[in-house]
Image (cartoon, rainbow, N blue to C red; front, side):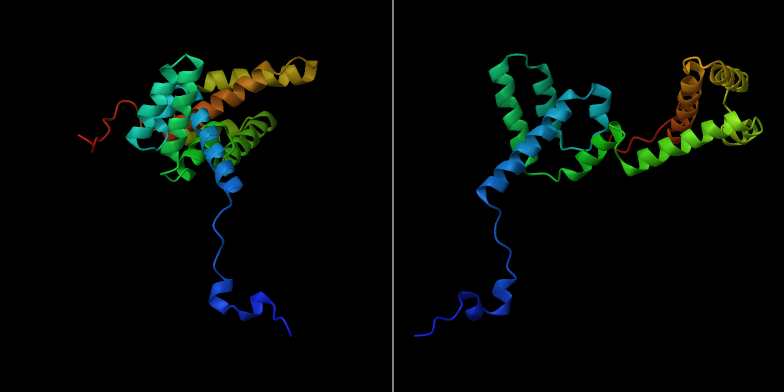
Length: 190
């Protein structure tokens, strides 16, 4: 008697059916969602407002932030994980990556600002380019920071002005991305 291989008897469309995830994989996925929930609870209130999530999940996260008893907090975190199983975690993870500086856009922004800082130190004329991009910039402060950063480099001192120059450029860039404070914002949710 010749035994045919079991796979040879299956039609082509049955071979292509994916297997359901194993119990271990489902458990790993649930733990990953709970870890994501822990990251949400660790955020500040302002950061939490920027994370795209359903209101029920936001309420559960706020409640978890409030709870201090160990067992009650553990149960609340399990509840947060349970709620997260019913939503797409990708937008939440993307926002957390932005907060942590891990998104590709945030990394590219950091590199662009670092190059701009290096250009400012190499050539004072770059300040004119900054003036065109950000007219609200304090050029006296930028010139002073440039001068101090160059002195620090020459004297092998700690790079305080070098770092401060980056912070000023980062704040200018972030201010350009945000709507001006004096303009009213449209609230469609009223």
